[in-house]
Image (cartoon, rainbow, N blue to C red; front, side, top):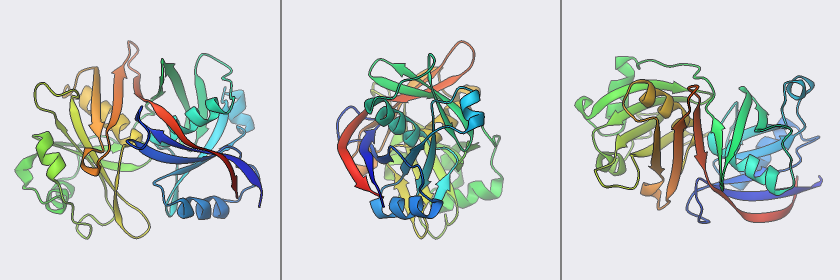
Length: 283
């Protein structure tokens, strides 16, 4: 085992401990997949990342670094809060972008990350699957969330790495009141969104339910889901080109996700990050 630079970062918040924590091993060189997974499972966090030099192909395409992203029990091709948190840690540790944007290489390819003042924002990767869900899935999700079918007013595949199934409810209060049934939703990653009431400081309330190796869990704040939901909602004229989503409220967090579609159609997903732990870890 080797001493490696390490940070634990809270993502999608300006206030420590109100966002989504992420473990970042800043030098994953020489670690096997099994070692990365073992360390991730030990952290007991929703995700852990390992920073590596870009591949030859990635470097030729402009990548500044490569990252492998793990959650308990499996590796992910892409995830949003690990993308922003890893970039924050890399920059804090002295990383320098070669171009205008930081370019991250990961399982879905290259992801651009821009600096918006104190926030970072990633360009939403293309959806791997979109369009409406099968009606059987909608009925199953409604039952698993303790809802009637009529409570779901819109739905879509939101797959951009993780296979999110997205559903929209009528009110944010409905979203916050959900008590999902793990056995009914077994094997499904479900994102739920609804508009906030007039006068709220955010446009939407979001919750994300996903399966780890042996249980249904809730993610405090989810970049990949918000990226895919933004592509769905903006594309369907269910949301404006620019908005802020709240997530984590039901868990006592105060995550804020900043969405913006720019002039060329790219959707940027942004948020603040803060370093809570910095030092060395033995892996």
